[in-house]
Image (tube, rainbow, N blue to C red):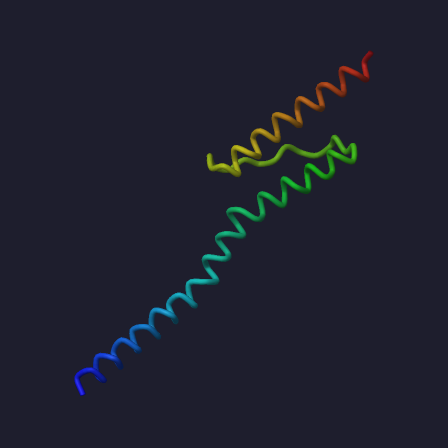
Length: 92
């Protein structure tokens, strides 16, 4: 009888943990989309436009100092260097 009570309590705890995990899933996924997916999508879109010759692409906004922000900062530097090089070639 004691073992069935303990087993029942453990089952209830397991269900509560599962329910809490399920409820936290969506906010965690939203955070991943905001922090990782959107900046990478913006970077990919800008790279695609530049590769097609569109040099009117604005610099990427940099918010933070994480790896994605550092990537965007490096991309902006590369983009500005490319624009300068193309303008120098056009002047020759």
